[in-house]
Structures are given as C-alpha cells and as structure tokens.
Amino acid sequence: MRDQAQHLPFAGGEPGLSGAADLYAFTGDAGRGGYQMVSGRWFHGPGEAVTVHNFLTAADARIGDTVVLTENGRPVPVRIVGEVFNPHTDPEVLVDASTVPALPPDMYHITLRPGADATG
Image 1 (tube, one colour):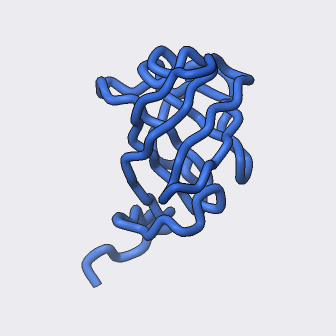
Image 2 (cartoon, helix red, strand yellow):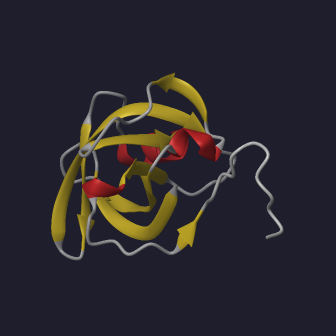
C-alpha cells in the first residue's frame, strides 16, 4: 500500500463554501491501514472518497455528496461514499491514488506475508 499525502483546498457541498483538508491517496489495499468505518463504504476507485467527520462538517457535506478538491489548480470532483473514525481534528479525505495521479508518494506502508523474515 502506498500512501500519498497533500494539503488541498476544497469546495464544499454548499455553493461558496470552501476550506482546506489533508488528502491521503492509496494504492493497494488501503483497508489494511486500520481505518474503522463509521458509515457508508470504502472507496472502490477513482472519483470516490472516504472522509472523517471533521471534513463532512467543514464542507457541509454528507455521504453521497460530491465535493471538489483542487490539486495544483486542477479541479478534482470526488463523491463521498463513506466516513471513517479518526481522532485527529484536521479535515481529512482518503481516495484511490488514481484520483490524483500527479501526487507523488511520500510514504510507503508494507505488509509482510505471514512467516516472512522482517530482519533480512
């Protein structure tokens, strides 16, 4: 699983509402990241997003709404399909990496197969 992160502006569910959120983009099985679903479902591909409660509040949005993120001046509409629990106070959006293909990775999470030797 590759995890990419960037702080992106967004336009919310209500016209004229905007702000900024931390975006996390994943390749592979992002479900292994330990996120607990509160409602809805995990994203299944580009254009779908899972958010935390603080993002839904900041964007005045709910599951099923489309919000527009802005990546390097390019609008990126995403449909919110789920909410995950996260104790952080920052608004966060989680997407498939193909939603924001120009975003370079800044972190890798690796899951070893059972019985693999992590030391070498």
